[in-house]
Image (tube, rainbow, N blue to C red):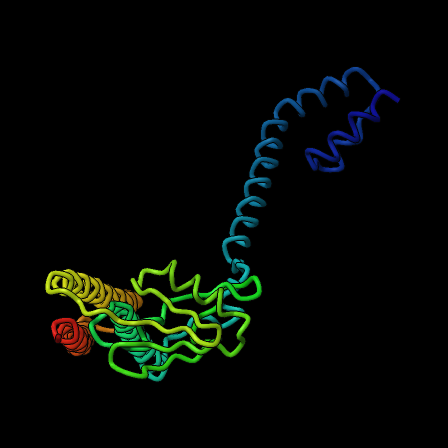
Length: 276
């Protein structure tokens, strides 16, 4: 019974020949077996280590031959990566230019509206463009609730569509900055345009010049915004540096054109102010 563990160990670990496993129970035989195992055990350990090394080497080689698979990027799956077409780039260029022109045109109209509000020596319905009337609890433009006429060069006639709004219109004119005194006869409101003094005309001319300069600054800012938009396209590799230079040059021509328009309406208003 004592020889069973020794037989199992030698068979599993050392893979010894079968003759070595036939161990007798006599002391002499046991001493002989002990001597034999003493010499064979180091070799067995070497075999075991070599076997493990070969196994590791084979596993490493198999791993190195295996192709690593990475999860595809979402952008690759969606097919997002593409270059902008010529049509798309042209559309972006046109959109920038059209927006700049539209904003410049609106600037001209805004300055013209400001000029119209400046009183001259002649009657003009546009003098009342900026007056708002409290009508049924809401502010509305005077022109939307009344008709304004010029019976002569020195007077305005305001005829409301609803006669009940006469007092509200009168109040709005008094509280405004047009500097006119309304005459309410119960049917219409009359406004007399007094002649301007020379000193007052010069003061109004300075106001007009200031408004015109503000308009010019607005136009230059619009040009700056458009150029920044072109430079953004250049950074996105949609435009070259030469493209941006050409577009900026064209934009400068448009800017100069609107600057001339601004100067033209300014001179026209100043002429009206100085005409007696």
